[in-house]
Structures are given as C-alpha cells and as structure tokens.
Amino acid sequence: MGPADPGKPSPRPPPHTLLRTERSRPVVKVTVLVGSKSDLEVAEKVRVRLEELHVPCSVHVASAHRTPDKVDRLVRDPETDVFIAMAGLSAALPGAVAARTLKPVIGVPLHRGLGLDSLLSVVQMPPGIPVAAVGLDAAENAALLATAILALKYPELTAELEKYRAKWRDEPASGSPP
Ligand code: AIR
Image 1 (tube, helix red, strand yellow):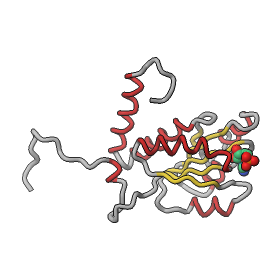
Image 2 (cartoon, protein in one colour; image 1 turned 135 degrees about the horizontal axis):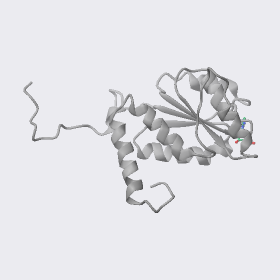
Image 3 (cartoon, protein in one colour; image 1 turned 30 degrees about the horizontal axis):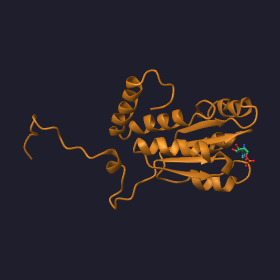
Image 4 (cartoon, helix red, strand yellow; image 1 turned 180 degrees about the horizontal axis):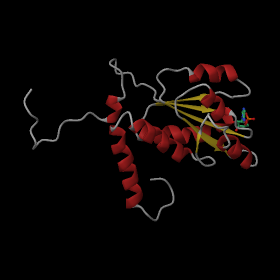
C-alpha cells in the first residue's frame, strides 16, 4: 500500500460502526442498572444521551436488596465496559456492582427520599471499592462520564464529546443540556 494522499482526509467510519461486532450487532458497552421501575425515567435520560453520542447501552431493573441475584448476573456481562448504577433511598446498588467488578462504576444517587440518604450511600464508599459518584438525578453527567471513560478505548468518541461541548459554547445562555 502506498502512502496516503495528504490532500484527502482518510475515510473514517462513524463511531457506531466501530462499536459493532463483525456480524454488525451493536455491542452493549454501557450497562445501566436501576433499583426500581420507578427509577426508569432517569435511566431513559441516560439512554437517550448515550444514543446521541453513539454509545450502545442496555437498561435493567435490578435491586441490590430485592433482586441481588439479578445484579450478580448482569455484572458478569463480558461485553460491558462501564456500569451506571442508580438508586434512591438506601442506594446500595452502585456499591454492590462495584464490589463485583473491576470495571468502572458510575453511581447516580436518585432524589426519592431525603436526597442526602442516597447521595451519601453512593459517595461514601469504603476505601478499596470506588464508585464515581455524580450528583442527584444527574443522568446527563453520568452519560457523559461513561462516554469519556469509553473514549480511552474508542478514541472516535472524543469527537462526539467535542461536538457536545461545542453545542454548549454555541448556546452559552442556556442552562439545559444541548
Ligand atoms: N431501592 C430499591 N431497592 C433498593 C433501593 N434502594 C430504591 C429504588 C427506588 C426506591 O428504592 O432505586 O429509587 C423506591 O423504590 P420503589 O420500587 O418502592 O418505587
């Protein structure tokens, strides 16, 4: 093969192509777990943002307290690179996931009771088992942080994050996500 023509930009498949298997099946890179069906509204915000960033994800209801076996099973998924776990009240789910994997776990405390209950449950992990905690109900930041972690392995996702930041710059007065 000869040298690339410097005048021509090298063709680069879009990220969603790079994140597919040979059989063109999208591989789930982010597994989102919520403690209850009542948490699905926040999970949907994560899913939509990840989809816009071309990151395949799957969402599951699995509670650290009510269905621990299901949490066990989901954490064993070999395709997942990053977990996002969200729960309200005594929010053990992010910690329960982190206890079972060496992969990064993002914890989203949900504002169901006091707010402080779930926030401290997610933030105050014991030394040795880290959870990357975002703010209360912070679906947007959870999706972006997951994408930033994935971008270390799939550098094309950096371009997606740059596009996202550029939208903030274009609409600096708006407080809502672009
Ligand atoms: N939860 C479920 N199992 C353990 C916890 N901490 C949380 C859910 C939800 C809240 O309890 O994540 O935010 C209330 O759940 P439900 O099902 O009663 O609406």
